[in-house]
Image (cartoon, one colour):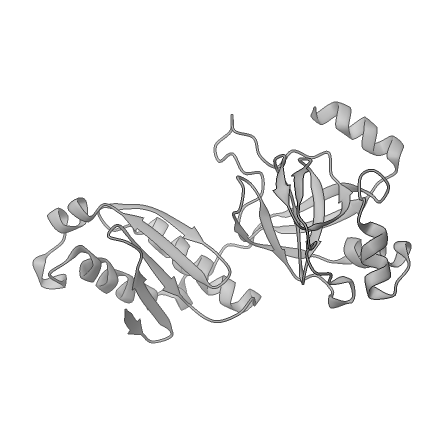
Length: 243
């Protein structure tokens, strides 16, 4: 493990490193993650494969053979040491490399009923009415901190604690693609039909995972999301267009 200024670099196997830039879930920390990711993408070292941002960490994958073959021996004796020294150097430019502000994406949502079978539970758990839960959820602006769990699944931060609700004690074996859920202080959208334990409060007809496109994930880390409540008629119309 290597520490340098405010970041910590740890090996992840023999072909990746994980860089920690802070603690917890905070937009400021995530901006540092995105800033370092962007700096590495714009100035990659020989042998770098990709960067994967998360809440407060950045994982960098590389080819040890290509790194060792191309880098000067003065940078270190192992591929890990060479990559570490390069990241330490480029991290000094984070303050000069502002992370690009992500897109603002609006997702239409049909709340409650068959589209959101857990909406009533979320309301009851927080001592609110169903309408209040919808208003609070739809009035927020959410930051996409990371894509994970399933292809295209966005982990969204910034949800009001007034509607925070724990995961289900017994996960469902299948949640439809497009389901909008709550788990603790997070909200997110299932891009594929998959098992899961989040409380489902609504459904969006907007596809989030399109394997024929590049990148296949509609949302990217750093994007911002707004949810727009729609009627069942509008929902069905949008669903016809996107299906």
